[in-house]
Image 1 (cartoon, rainbow, N blue to C red):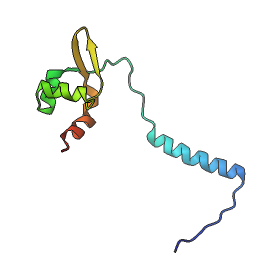
Image 2: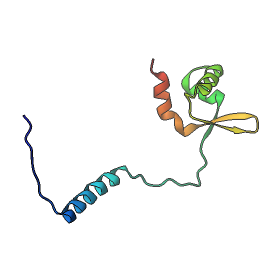
Image 3: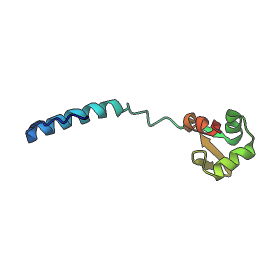
Image 4: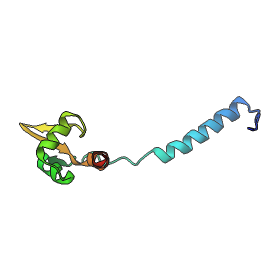
Length: 95
């Protein structure tokens, strides 16, 4: 059986309690800003294929089905951002 608890708070007390809890939660979530001058690491399709242990054709299929993060096109060449593959590698490996 659940116990009910009735608490009487003033509006000011409730606001300060909410502000304290939200502030604590936000301080855990907020990350330090990264240096925006860093350029992202770009990997070719061949490098990404080697990373996953698959062929370039498989990488092209994954791009078409949007399994991989969006690509960057420079002239006629296709590059993929190297920073996005930590989570992508684990989801692609799952059966």
